Image (cartoon, rainbow, N blue to C red):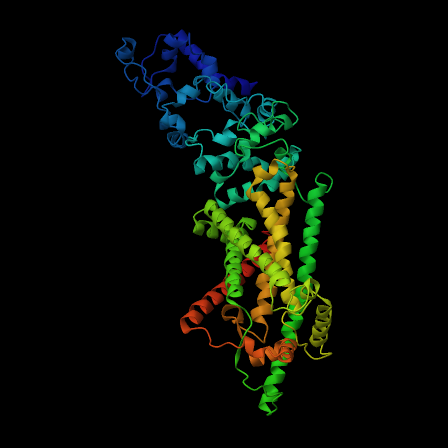
Length: 618
């Protein structure tokens, strides 16, 4: 009872004041009762007393009224209230808002200034204020968010959740970085909050799958203006469930929605799983089994070749120690006449094509890995170095074009080798499985077995023909890689073209294949291939043969003894003898390029490992 009396005490005092004569100023302020003597027809004493301003005198806001007689004569008019005198924080935010730019002042939103009560975080009051002007804002009140707020769900998004209460930023140019970022950033604030989503029975898959997509990766890297954000597909205010016929993501409306960016989108194109999860076997079995297959390929390939590399590394180290000890004791295993004479192993076309492979592969890796590991700080640094994801994409496609050039050249050279060359003996099949062919044959099984026996100290190191089994694997991998990486890359490069006759979920499959096969290729090249070619104890720190095409006689006999023996039996050794070595400047620049490529690859390998350890693979 006492509590209620104290609550309405200010109103009672005002009413009592009205009953007496109009009092003059009490101290520095004019008695509110005096003001209500004239303004009671517009201002309720009880409502004002119960409002947030009820403890203030009228002249606390209307500071220009200092002389009551002049005011009553009309000589002093009531000016617009300067709310910033008390509400400094809110004023600072408002000053930086679009409302201030449009000269929308406090009282134009807070029209109930004399009856205004605490909002107590009730979003319904915020919406009620905003729709005084924005009553036709693209169907917010009919949206899933608007209905949630109206029902009293304080987790549902209201105007202030996206636009703030007072610091309402102008959206400005629709294509600007800030505006494009806003389209997604404000949605993430709630939908990435696991606790909030859990208590509202809403999954966070939308955020996780978006961030794993090409659109989300670009957003995370800091280039949202290049991709679609949440509001582009779901709209900004009229967000509705997909089953609602009016929803922008309803199957009947998807072509129109997708066509905002993909102008030639078709019904097939819209079959794309926008929020498809490859770990959800029940909803997305195709994505699940594609991911399982690619993961199996990665794990099995790395398991076999990393074990092969480690065994070779240890056995090669032991062999080098044994050779050094034998030389110290005066034992020379064999004498090779003209041991340092140079013989041609590769032609100029082979060297040129290998340079193309290095340039294109490093270019693809440097521009592709930052996208795959988009949550890493180093990925953002790389993208900024390129001047943005658009430039990185252009470089990536140029390098892809180079890849198709050397792949086409490899196909032509294969056909030329099998059917046209006159200096190779035998028919098509004899050439295909002959010693000069890169096609695997039964000899490779014997070589693999011999290498494993050597690894385990159970036999001598095999001598090879022109091509080793690991070199053949590298060559065959190019064909598989072009099918997997090249085919999926073309689909992702020209989605509208392929979307005209392929269902959209094929792009989900292509993304998984392209990403995982690229990871396999880069991991294999920068670890296994680099070791096989440059890092093994016999070659460290670099085998220069691919840059000058030459190999010494001693090295050829030791490593490819069967090839040398065949050349001797055919009497053609001198045909391959190099007449001169490469020039000093050529060696300087090309070796410099080779070491730069090697260092770049190893750096990328380290960054990939770091990203996996840090949990950054998507």
